[in-house]
Image 1: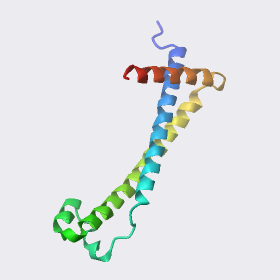
Image 2 (image 1 turned 30 degrees about the vertical axis):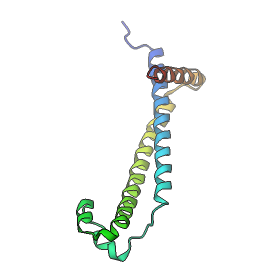
Image 3 (image 1 turned 60 degrees about the vertical axis):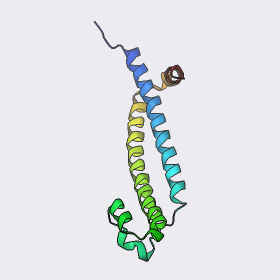
Image 4 (image 1 turned 90 degrees about the horizontal axis):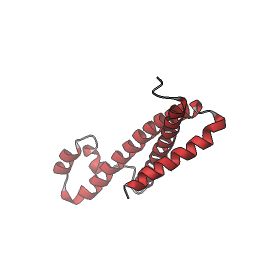
Length: 130
């Protein structure tokens, strides 16, 4: 008795291709948003805040004079966003690699049919929660 037939395997493959495509898209969106946010911050730490640069953010906030706290927060946020860009790019690269492996497994002659059906299944599942 065959439990998982070829059609089921291809449907699952198409579902995974669609899901990974959205995953890569979400990483791209996050990266673009983080890069836009980072552009709003100064990239240089003022010399009078440099002593707080490698300090735990909470400890730095407690130690910093209140008159400089907004600048400190911006500097810390810029470093955090810069780190997030790096991690998002790493995760995006991994997801894109897996997506390519999945696509390579899908036969070209039926790809459009199965991907279209997978998109319809995804859309139907998403609309059930609305």
